[in-house]
Image 1 (cartoon, rainbow, N blue to C red):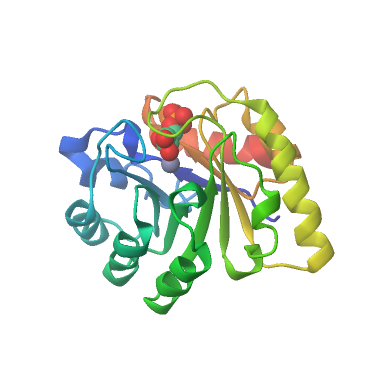
Image 2: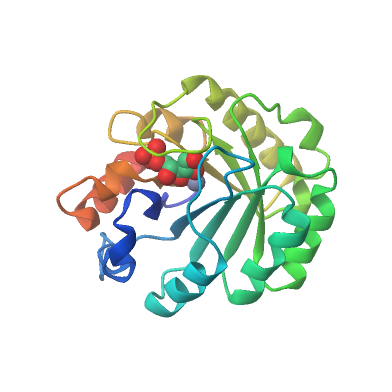
Length: 223
Ligand code: DX5
Ligand code: ZN
């Protein structure tokens, strides 16, 4: 861990004003987001539909904040690499969506992005501990994927503590990210469990000043 990273989720932003919403967390200083989190949903892996590659390509032109694409989709073998080719910084797919996560990670990296593995709240980490060294990011879901504005599930923090021990013991270069229900009331317990990067949707884009919310969350996580 180092300085906590904050990744605002544009799922909670105004989709008709995405460039302006990205700019709201791209100013200089403490209100600048580390990553912009982009939730891609296909109405199959999750019961919701959001956006896809064309919108990501437009966002890449609209902001210089690195894009953190969270693919809540089936068949990441086929659909994940194009996000890397387009220029996303980090491309995360779900462990539950593929039988061969290593092959997907390899293809994402070959296309020039960091590779992330995500686990739903009910998915154990143990089956993936052997392959996690081949990923750059582990995204621990702290709500059921599909919608913003849900309640944080503190029980998933056990997985954060487990992976932190593995990282330390094996000296891995793995970023641990958490997604779902992160706000002023929950970010401190997540930070204590060893999280590096905090996704926040409603807590950032529901605030009057998204940039100030980013700065305040980062301060809280560092405390
Ligand atoms: C949920 C998404 C999250 C969501 C988080 O499936 O993966 O990124 O935007 O929203 P909040 O922070 O409001 O829980
Ligand atoms: Zn997400």
